[in-house]
Length: 479
Image (cartoon, rainbow, N blue to C red):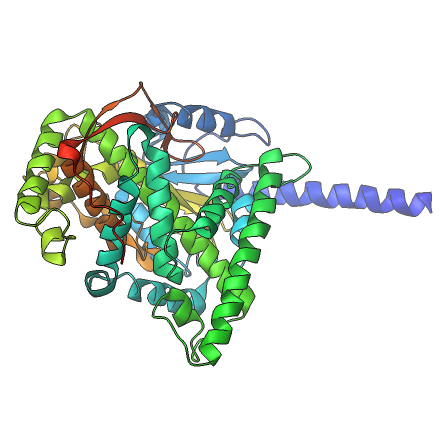
């Protein structure tokens, strides 16, 4: 028995070594992008993480681009990876989703999101569900059905602001409540706030080691994920019963429960869970960083304030914003664009090569990961003058990407996985900025810095001291 066990152990080790040798021999025959794989197993992961935990992560990529060019090979998070800082290559990667490349995420994210989330869907199912999601977040739907709730819920939240607040937390509360309202028609209540607190724990686990016995953060995230799934399952069952009785609401959950969809409760829960993450985390960060950048750029703050005071001067103080008001915010859109460009909430996307991919004279081997860096392109002096300076006027005087190829500005990704809620995010941010600058003045409560790992955020949740202007309040903003 011991002999048989020893034989299989030795055979397995030899097989593994032969496989590694053959794979390395094959890679040597290919013309890989130049680079450095770093230390065995660890690669250059520690250097990457160290850089992104600072206010200035650029040296990690800058040094390698200067040495190897815009396409370079490294080894991060346990896998050989080709980094692209070239807009043409990034566009090629995005446009060939499902053909040459497939989505690839860390195990912690896939486990916490669920196998039926839009993030992990592929092929025709992804195309169908992406289209459904976009149909609930296009301009006409926002104008006719969502804008009133966006305006009302933002005002309702701001009515409670006084003295010192943590802007990042307040923005997250706003965007979560908006997402729950849009997906499931719930107004803020104790249930939505309890759900939000579990989401905070769930998201913290996205970039942890996906081993419950090793990582306390991941263990808490798994527990939170279970609670969120149970809460959503209960709502889905209740709404399914109502739908069968002919009572249907015109929201995302109503569409998922429609007769033409035939989704199981588990599939719907995973789908909703992931959409709540998407609508909650990124938009709130953009709101916060827009305020931070405006605070640090007084001329931009003054011009934005003037634009919104002109809009408010034409309306009664209690009257909500209309679509025509949103379309009358050109400088606001410059601020949003520049915040997206400088902050890079999504710094890039990982994909895995489905076959050997030949590009720019190099070969990316099948199974290798690629990272299309949006951040590197957005902060490249060749595409944006003084690229690392917050300058919203660059979008006003057409010195931005309007004079460059269209693929240099990709804050919402592109190709089949273009963020389906990009227009909705713009509207929410614009309405948020409108009510902020017309109702409050503020100053930072203390110095706060940006960090970019595991996500883009401020270290201290951006504390500010707020003061209401002219005692402006819209009451409780009830329906």
